[in-house]
Amino acid sequence: MQRLPISSFAGYVALGLLVLTGCATTAADSGGQEVSDTAVRTIRAHEVMQLTQTHQETGMTLLEGPTFGEDGGLVVVDVTAPAGKPKVIRVDVERRTSRTLHTDGRGAYTSAQFSPADGRLYLTDYAHGEVVSLAPDGSDPRTFFSGRVDGVQMNPDDIAFDRNGNLYVSDSRGLSEGVENARVVRISRDGTKATVLAKDLAATNGISFDGDYRGLWISELTQNRISYLRLDDKGGVTFRHTAIRVDGGIAQTDSIAVDADGNLYQALHGRPAMVVYDRTGERLAKIEIPARAAAAGLESATNIAITPGGTTAYMTVSGPAGGYLYAFDALAEGIRQSNGG
Picture 1 (cartoon, rainbow, N blue to C red):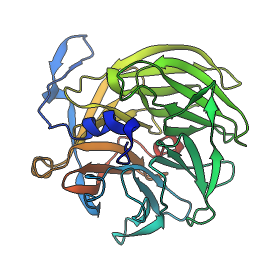
Picture 2: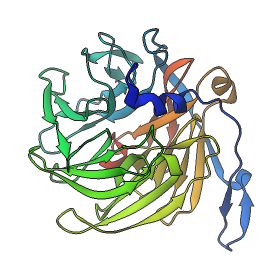
Picture 3: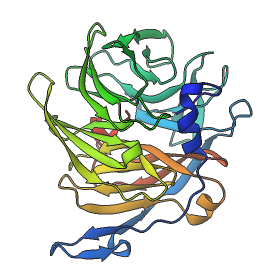
Picture 4: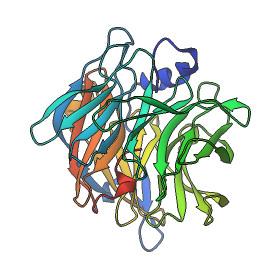
């Protein structure tokens, strides 16, 4: 998540330039024994199209936040796009065409999601600590939230909306410093009130409600763990615990999506792959792109959007070779929790 040159992004830039190595993991079978990674189902993703190339001005491209709009178009952000280049891109996945939905001279957008309250597209600006919104056609840009939360400016990364349109934001503070002072922040649907729900986290990145909106799954990038936050009926946290430890090797936990069966899709920064867990923490599958594509310069799979009501998933993959969309068949149908963020 970086827009160069911005000093607060230095740590993430370093992460984005990691050289990939293989990593081995294990999973427990029903008898509690350790089994090799080869026993985990492998889902092969296939290339749909290339969307971006490495930007000369920033030295990289990083696609994020895929989300489907009401018109069926897929919206993707390019975190490192320089001023004037497409920062928000609309993709017609059937025709395999794309066009600029929005650009500006300032924002470094790390996620995108449509609000259930007003239907507008919401973007997190990591560099400037803001949440902005656009009309679905990319027009009418507005600053939805800006300013300090409990005296500290945010580095907002991903978004999850509750049913009423309130925003739950992963505030990825401490990323470049390597300290655990990240937070989860709740912003009211009108943008007037921001509350810290959880703090002292390790570079919060992915955030998604579980299937019944009773809790939040949170990925902590610098500790390669997924935490679970149980919520009360007012959206406050009643308790939290470490739910899953991800054996990522040099790769780190990026965004999270949840399908209709409650399965978690954990994206990996530093490896063009994802891992899938059920709600009890059992590892179900790994999603990989062809080895030749990875070797050619694709280094990270940041997020997915599963077609609402369908099982076709679109994964954003980036590296020195450019920014690409890959597709695969998800384990269950797409819902709001697997459509952006």
